[in-house]
Image (cartoon, rainbow, N blue to C red; front, top):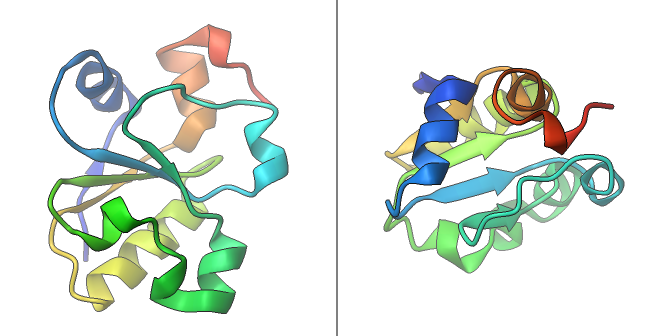
Length: 114
């Protein structure tokens, strides 16, 4: 299994200078509706991961040098990707419970909901 973090915890991490990867697994069109702007953001849509496997992961993720916080719309796809990464041997993987929808509702309303 894999641990989860809350959107409130993610909000605190985003305010920090800590090194981590925020892996957004939503589809490209979804990013037009709501997106967290941060230098640590990497995007790898689940559809691309499903078809291409580990080669579709951004280099920063493949390096496994920093914690990986996985985000989707509500937390379902991100939990699938988290479980898959753990099966691939990744150790520092966290699902963001509630996804960007919960983040927008509880942390930053400027993000917007869809």
